[in-house]
Each structure stands twice: as C-alpha cells, then as structure tokens.
Image (cartoon, rainbow over all chains, first blue to last red; front, side):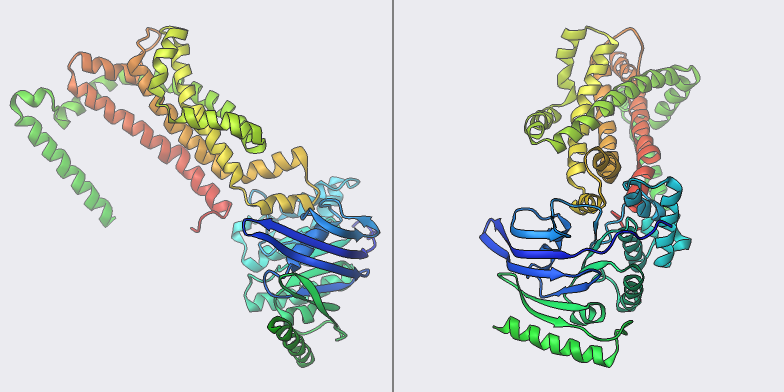
Length: 259
Length: 255
C-alpha cells in the first residue's frame, strides 16, 4: 500500500460567474460565487434542477471552461481536468470494455511512479473498501446499479485524489442501496480524509453526509444559504435530529424558491 | 418450435406451388425452372467442383476488397470524426460517393485497369470504403461525452484517450459499420463479376452471367439461391453474434 502522503485540498472560488449562450439567448448559470472549502471538508450543494450546482462542480473538475472569476485548488488555478480531482457522475461512466478490476486500474495505470504490482495492490485495497473484492473479474453489465456506483467510487478513489467530486452519484439508485452507500461513503471519508464536494437535490442526503450544506437558487444560480451540520458521525439516515434539520433546510429552500 | 414448423410448412407450400406452376407452364417452363431442376443443377455443379471453385474465387476477391475497405475506412472515419475540416471535405465526398451504386464504377475501372483483378478490386473497394468511413465517423460521434470526461478526470488525454477510450467505446458502432461494409462489398463484387469478364478466375457472378447467356435458367436461379445463402450465412454466423455480444456488454440493449 502506498502511503497517503497527499493532503486533502483547500478549494477557493472567488467571484465565479458562468454564462451559457444558447439559441434562446443568455442563461446565467452561476452568479458571483464566493466559496472556501477547507481540508477534508465534506460540502454538499443542494438546489433544484438548473441552479448551477452541477456546473460549479464541473468548474472545479476542470470540465467546464469559459467562466469568469478564480477557481483555485491549493492556490493553483484550475486549468483543465486532472487526476488530483476525480469525479463520480450520476451515471456510473464505467468502461464496459474493461472488467471491474480493469476499471479501477484505469486511473492507476495513468499514474506515474508506481510499479504494476503496487497498482494492483491499490486496486484491490479500494475494491475491498467498497466491498467488491470478489467481483474483480466481473463484467460491468453483470453488476447491479448499486454495485456499479461502488466500482465508480473505487475508481474515483484509486488514484488517491486530493478532491473527490460527486455529481448526484446516488440519484438513480433505490432507497435501500442508497442508505447502504451513505454508510460506506461516511466510513471512507473518515478513513481517507478526502475533501468532498457532493451535488444532490435531496436535502436529507446532504444533511446525512455533509459538514456543510449550501443552498442554491436558480436563474441566476447563486448560493443563497449555508448550514453547518454539527451532528455526530457516523450519521444514520433515519435519525430524528437529522430529520429535524433536513426539515428546517427544506423549509428554507421552499422560501427561497417561492420568492 | 411451433412457429418453426409453421414457417417450414409455408416454405414447403411455396415450393410445391412453384413446382406445380413450372410443370404446367408449357413453353414458359424454360423461363420458370422447377425447384427440382434447380436442385439438380446445384447438386451436379457441386459434385463437379464448379460451385466450390467459383465460390473460392469470389470469396478471395471479397476478402481482399473488404480488408482494403476496412483498413482504409476505419482510420479515415476516425479522422473525419476528429477534424472538422476532414469532416467537411472527406466526409462530404464519402457521403456523395456512398450514394453512387458501385456498378457505376465499372466503366471507369475497365478504362483504368482493363479486364483485370485490379479492376474488380477497385470496384469492391469503392463500394465498401465510403460506407465504412461514414459508419466509423458516426460511431465515434455516438460515444457518450461522459466516457471522455470521466477519462479526462483520471488523467487520460491525447493518444491514450483516443486508443484506450474513444476507440473501444465506438467498437459496437464500428462493428455495425463493418457489417454494412460487408453488405456493400458483397453487392459490389456481384456487380463487378457480372459486368467485368476476366479470364483469371470465374466467380459466382460469372457463372450467373453465363447461365443467362446459355439460357440455363436452372443455373441462374440456383446461383441466386447460393448467393443469398452466402450473404445470409455471413450475417448470421459472423456478424450477428459479435453485434449481440458487443451491444449487451456495452449496455446498448437489454437482453
């Protein structure tokens, strides 16, 4: 196992604006976003569709270009995608021509300074972490939706990124599988201390996972409110304190949207 | 099983109707060979080795032309998918020439290459190449942007992105393209063999053509059946299993 020498990142967004120019004129996707995210902080972006939360995540990922303002990770401006900021998408985005192990090996093979033996060891470590060590030779289409997202999580963690970006990764899963994954993700966050940005439209999910929950409003996309979540970890999705806080946040979200 | 029996019964009824018509056609029976006559021709020609030799000649030509078509078509299709200028030039040429029936290349091929195997090859390649270019181009454009983005966030770029992600991602579409290429190559070759008379080997198309010249309708119909059978077998034996496998594995169809 390679030592975890990389420290989680600090992310700084300063006066970020993003405008999409389409057939029907201009759409302000993000307006004046100012945000600081600390080392190994777990931050959730919550808001209705079209509020720009995914766009902001894609800006940090380096997948979205043509924005104004500064986006910095550890003081260096974001300039295109990179292995230090891996992404987990709503759709698993696993490569069907590779098996489970092949998918987890994909980013590792691109990472210099490792021997092949070390790469395989790292891949095994993360497959074990997500509980799929016995499925390494399985083809992607043979896995259930939840298993696919677990492989995607292992793949995103394997190159030991400084930031993990998650774009509604559990939205397409059933409730049971989702609750299992909340547990897994919290366990992994505790063990690996990644800085995590997590986009969701599910308030309770955000409260269950995040240290901080940011509320977004659409057109123009802005951060409207911020909640600290001080509940003890690991958190249980059906915990009453958690439910109470998520009710408060949902009410706040409703007021924002009603205006 | 029940459906199979029903289908077989219908085919048998059709054959029986055909046989009855042929036997009662009087003078026109020359034009309508009975299924038994066609069967007798096929049996005789198979025994004499004539069919086997002709099939071998045809298949050799087909394989050569097809390999050329694929070998040039796939890389060119990747280029038209990657570069806008190539798409707007070569892509347009491919689109135009693909609409040209390959038999239209025969006069040009004869004047350039004479009655040679090269002329034959040229016609088959012209019939195949454009379809393969278009299918490859289309296949690469069909790749979900998600694959590219996921690969990029893991540090893939340039050649690695092309050969380890985009090429395998487009494989099901490329296989469909090569299947289409095969269909075009097969049609082109039959046109070429019927129109280009050469002495370096008699293919199935030639046999079909001589059947007409000899008024041997049993030969004409027999060869048509054989040509249908070869096309059908290639699709079912070579392409269909591959396509099904890839579509399933790539998650393009539920099965």
